[in-house]
Image 1: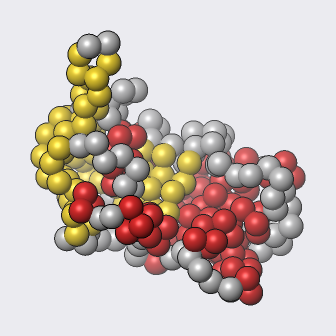
Image 2: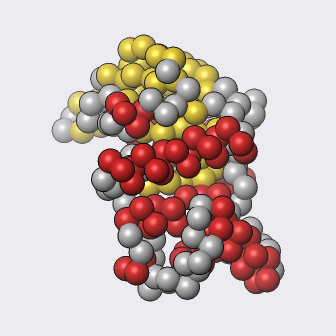
Length: 225
């Protein structure tokens, strides 16, 4: 499903080039749960952003379902991010003035569906993550684990084929983090959603099928769990 071919990403900083990724070639299989690990500045989040179409200043090729991401026009890229990719963030990225239902509904404003359908799909996504009784609660009325579940519901509302998770348990205690990872593993196995997750936590990484270790922008090794 996802393939990187000789991908390099570099930035000009203080008159010299800093490499985030160096000639990375890698495949993520359809339905796989992949964890990416490495020290700060190793290129983990860059890897994730390139797959998500958020960072295109690269050399090399990125293919999703055998389609070159670099050849997508702006409107096609927006559609790709909205319909094929779901994003889960460490900081949840919820709007504090909106309810859980309204937060989950936000990606659907770009999907051109009716208000009735927006409500139906958003409520169904919240029910899927165990928050069917929290539709009208705002983020400050929810625990950290519940806020992350709202974030996951928002990522799922467009039925994406790929979930990209950047430190999804980073703001959670170990018990709550384990609950979130158990849910993501179940989602991966039962719905066949491909998950690519950045994490610094070895324990959380073991929920994945494979662990990709990155250092200084290069792949060091992959480990089957």
